[in-house]
Image (tube, helix red, strand yellow):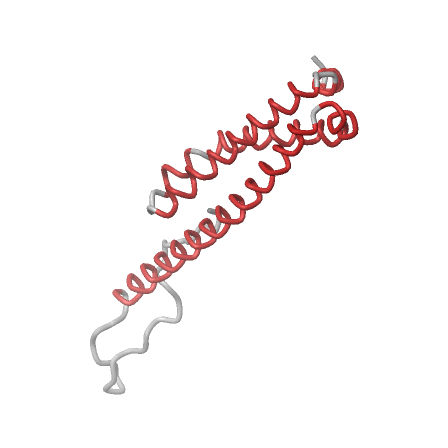
Length: 155
């Protein structure tokens, strides 16, 4: 099945069916984002990361249906006005959930970076000489963090 035939098949769905599919995809996406947000708040970064493939798939499904709804807006508004109103409300819910999810992701990233930077600094201090140098002073702290510690900024 080609992309054009898939688009045509979606566009030709009855109004109520297309709206119902979009509502189901939207609800599943909001639920996945809510689960991820909850796990991130609890500090379960690995478990939250495991939701990424499913969340990506759900987002793709929703975007496909949302584009179909945009293309069929006039027809859907005439044939299923209540379903369209529910979709608008659901989309607003998605926007709210996405904003919260992004705030929690940014916080988790910042905390992770701070922890790793502190660890690198502490490990680097262990490499510092604790004896007096020729001038009778303890050697200055090295100018860089410990070698071998890297911070992956992709979260």
